[in-house]
Image (cartoon, rainbow, N blue to C red; front, side, top):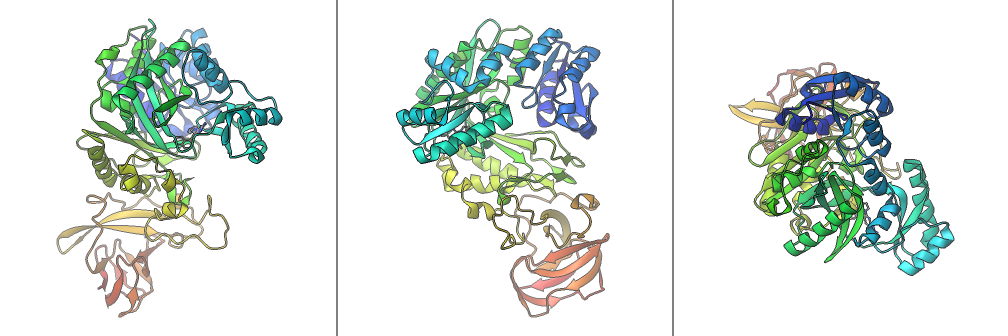
Length: 593
Ligand code: MV4
């Protein structure tokens, strides 16, 4: 077994891999960019080496520098995680040439699966069912029209160098084909320097079902069952679960066989995922991901198998530690990706600092994260802060457990997908195991996920996609009133922040985690001051009717203006503040009945 392994990644996946290395008694060599000096993955490493400036090309994608660190540290192998260099065949080859083991599949398997047309060709030859369509790129729009006519509309135009939905366009009829074809081609050129496009039949509302495989050097290939990852937005998976709600034991065995055949056809080794589309009882190969995936954890939870451990063992030449017959699925696991994104603003990235951070815990809860209080989500890297994974005996209980765990999670003042996940998991559609496509495409539903008190998007700004309508942050303070503890959520709208200063420059003062679950914000009729300061302005009068979220007063504290809004709708029966007055944390500002 290796003595030392270099983890060529950052964030949660670097932490995830290092945890297994530690359990295996293997030294973990960490690497970091100048932006990541003070992060958990660096501290968890047994030794850590600077790669270079924050830009990925100069750090986590810098092959020469990574191989130099491997040599200097004496690491015998490199685990690439996902993203960055994980599916880069030249990198796998460069490792081999440098005498370092690449913990992943052979370069030839990465390359074969990297070309989506080549993969389809190989899979068709191996008897793996592929989505009906062509296995070589169309030479021209005219040829694509001929092929599409044969396949039958609607068709999907997909970039040959693509994958994961990049360079994917749908044409409902021949009139739409040229645009779809050219759009897919442009995107293929932009992201993969490959303008080639092929045509597939477009399946309506399929399920994304993928099978985890493991293959060792002696040629044994097994599968660990499937995951359903149908809840996606712009081809980014958001929620994943295992087992898939619409796959029974018979289908599991069938698609497991399809997946192991697919892996065997490219002499696969290591952990990999065969992605496919499920429509009723039909299952079609989509592509193979030749890396450990973000969502591998739900499979770990239902099988009890550490997939990273198997990867390390396989790379060291050891056989798989389990046989197919020993793989047993137990219970149900769900994963929610906790991204710094604003679902109510069309999933716009919402990078920023984290001042207060509390992870959920307790029975059946696993959090894989790479950040902590004091960390910052930078726009340079992936917006995923953490993965929250739960296990329970069945899907319904796992859902309840996930909702409980999401309610415990505090990441302040960052905007994350937590409210989105809580909303989706509470729907009938989720309970019925549907793809929730209707909700994900429903702008009004998504907008309803805005934090309470969010100013309505300004009118007349046209399409609000990625609109910059000001930072809306939410913070929770603990307030004790008459011996009872209350959690008060304070919502800062765009007008509450100093206009000139960047929100990032706010002092991280007095930010406290909430007392309990997400529903403990009621404070009766009394509106209490969440902070100490001076009243700048009073916006209501005694006797006035106010709506929940309406401005009551503005309190200046630490040179910042804080809008205090009505915690409930009602009549202001008591007003205890006046302009210029000093207030202390916990003071009663008003009574709203
Ligand atoms: C498709 C498809 C329909 N027909 N291909 C490809 C990448 C993956 N992220 C989603 N992809 C799709 N490929 C054909 N021929 C529909 C999707 C798709 C999808 C599939 C399952 C569940 C959710 C989805 C959301 C968007 C697109």
